[in-house]
Amino acid sequence: MSWYGKSGAGSPDLCNALDARAMLPALLLLGATLAAGGDSGYLVGIAEVKITPPLGTPMAGFSARQGPSKGVHDDLFVKSLVVTRAEAGLALVTCEVIGVERTLVEEVRRLA
Image 1 (cartoon, rainbow, N blue to C red):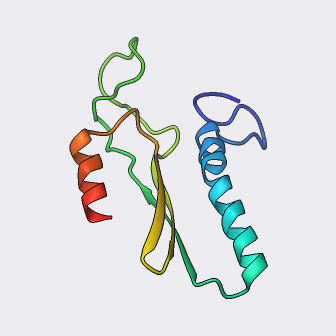
Image 2 (image 1 turned 90 degrees about the vertical axis):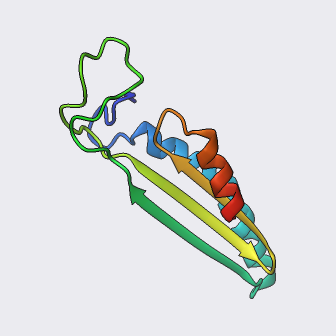
């Protein structure tokens, strides 16, 4: 696997593989619950939003880079899995970025 995407035909992208591993426990728990109880009252939703910045955006993460972005190798995404039942819920969100500001985290928590 390559940090920059596919290393060969049919090789999974590292970011997508990490997203799948992060969501797998929640999906397995949900599947087991649904199989055991029929209509469990769970509501499940998934979403994916492309967040690739425009060309010319300054970038972080590679100290030898000179200047802003010049092209797009792979688009960047925010992906989410939300599971709710009655008044309780769980949201798993992955962001293909180096980091997020604390204010964004606080706003997401406030809206949840």
